[in-house]
Length: 300
Length: 300
Image (tube, rainbow over all chains, first blue to last red):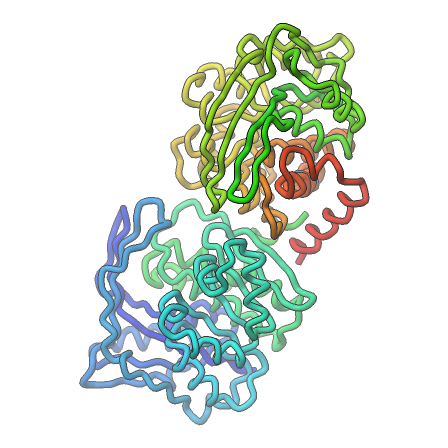
């Protein structure tokens, strides 16, 4: 089996009510890959600038992530994003977005990645996501993430992408925006009419559900008592989700349901620290323990 | 076994973005009793005015609810409440509150109710709730609901009540207000320090969880696609919850978990119609079917 994760790497500056970090390791594909790694070693595809630190490449490599697909534009700068959270965590303000090398990101999958069976298209322009997907010879299960910006400015590209992926993963706000449906169950049903066979709808602290033909499973979030920084939680959810699927080697309903728990566990570790400070330091035993905790909380 | 439900009966005028009802049957104990009835016939305690319609007494009696504890103040008027919901359902405006006979509500349990094993103190002034509870000889499991108003204006009475009940049921907003904790898990933990052995925390469309010693179970809401009127959903949740507990005859962790599903099912029927238009017309088969649906959605 094999798992390709395509998306962004970034340096994020994040401010919360309690603390802050400047230029910390971030990016959709980075978070996803780190969260997937305890389950299955992913193949990363992304672009960074000459300023991307060797220690960060090393951190990812040490987690077992294949870095062959990391393109470095020596004369460019890594994508940078800055954000600030309100004390209630529900409102996030973007303070700046410097696309830098991301502006001309043209994903090129290494030859060795083209046989990837499982593919996660982390948040990026849907045309870029589609271009990446087209380089995979025979994906068994492909999943795309998206965001409000693309729903707004690149809807035709997103529509084309939805015809090609097996599943779409998105949050409540994005689902409402994409479908015009306020009710999330109806929104999910509408997404399924747009192409994907499966939709995963994330509701942040309120959990997530997955829907498809003969499939409907709903799960609360892991009961985290101390949120430090929610940045990357959605990408880590996707990482735990995809990592489990790749480790099992199929996308059967039972696998997808368990993958939802693994995604929830990964997201819970993510929010307990800035950047990958917490999630990159969790052992397999930590993952197993929290999975068992979560399973106990949701089992009748 | 036996279940006493003490609280309000009302005539509600409700306006939503789509429709409205004037002077429809409402009230915390009324909703709870109707939702409990398919599981276990409850004993109702409440007060109404001379304007309370015979057809409404009949409706409740036909559901199997014991009406011996209904006090009628012939010269008074039934409690009336008016509310309006914003299109997103998350904001409710109270347009008027006419306490009427409720102002001097002094609950008197009929002699035959005093051996009740299970007691639900639906939303009312905590001093009134305590007075009712004290008339029950040996409750096996007593649960109280409350609201922001009492947390604000009757905290000492509420503190005294919390020392006496086995469980407190409240929503997210109330839990935050009662404990000063924004994080709901910590808020629930704090409630347990205030007296109750068990806390049930309702999150509306985001489900509910229950916590106590050796007990932690979390559940999403039933996926309702068409909300008509959310009024009474929390009381119906309590009704399904208490009805199941009374029908089993214990409050063991397994019973409480299943009771959470029954509460969720009852709340879902409630929101599908104004007043009790939907929930009072559901058969046992309807309940069983939806319980099975919900169980499937939350089972790994």
